[in-house]
Amino acid sequence: MTEVCLSNVVKDYGKFRAVHGIDLSIQDGEFVVLVGPSGCGKSTTLRMIAGLEDISGGEITIGGRVVNDLPPRERNISMVFQNYALYPHMTVRENLGFSLKIAKADAARIGAAVKEAAEILGLNELMDRKPSELSGGQRQRVAMGRAIVRHPDVFLFDEPLSNLDAKLRTQMRVEIKKLHQRVGNTIIYVTHDQVEAMTLADRIVLMRDGHIVQVGTPLDLFNAPVSTFVATFIGSPPMNLIDGRVTDADTISLAGGPAVPVPVGVRGLVKSGQKIQLGFRADNLMPDGHSVQEGGEMTALDLTVTLTEPLGTETLLFTEVAGTEVQAKMLNPRPVRPGETLKFHLMLDKCHVFDAASSEAIR
Ligand code: ATP
Image (cartoon, rainbow, N blue to C red; front, top):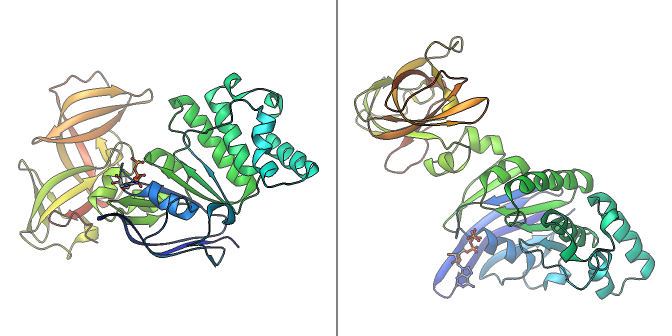
């Protein structure tokens, strides 16, 4: 079993606390993505697990063994970085086998491990090339191959796709997911890209300012964000938020005037006079005239279009309600002009209500 557990792990750089006593338990075989904005402490956390960074407090265990004081090579982990740092003078075959050679494995074992990695990653045709003769995606696959040959208990990935162009990133994302399905190792993966987190993770760990903000499956975070930070970080486009005030037990008055009923899920949980933010996704706004969901409670909202972005099947509309930007979607719209006001129906049962003072979800 190769569970990875962090208990109250702290990292201080001098007086600056980069990681504030985080607790996290990663199951054997789980694909966990640490995600968050720049500087939130995700790379530091990964580097502490790898042993590349000392921990200032707490405990890290891998497979039940406390590794706080173990050097990286004794942790049975493999790490893939964003700059894949292949040895330029070695062929792909030599790059793949290098770590085993250093570990003084015999030639037969190195040959078998290299062959297996090459097959898993489709590198067979490239084995005699040097890194300079490979594309960015191929180099990244070699970097992953180097990690695989050591049969580590845990793979650590630090923004492995950030140097690739958008198309290649999408392809490599699929390759990494296939690799996990095939090899089944525990993977801890760092990215600032919420799309990578959503598509790859069994569980997402969303961090901010050295704290874990929410842990859950991608859909947990998408459907039940604990705060406005999670609601706007996860999902594309980000969740719309409109300021409002609870005027009585049943009504919210939104900035700019429109009044909407208090969503069913939070009735009885909000107080008259409370300042809130009403959150909803673009998909929860139905253009007037389109079929609406049966039985769901709806409220009308007039949105003034400022900009349109055709995405192919649908068009993203940037609109405004009393100075607040709201993004909506339309399937095959008639031409829409900036300045035009359109009626939409908001699915109230899909709305989230956040306390304006704490930014936390009310539920
Ligand atoms: P990014 O996505 O930009 O890489 P991150 O979430 O991975 O960000 P970390 O690299 O973990 O962030 O850094 C967390 C915080 O610790 C940042 O504020 C950073 O400036 C600080 N930090 C990182 N390394 C050091 C260091 N060696 N000395 C001092 N401060 C550091």
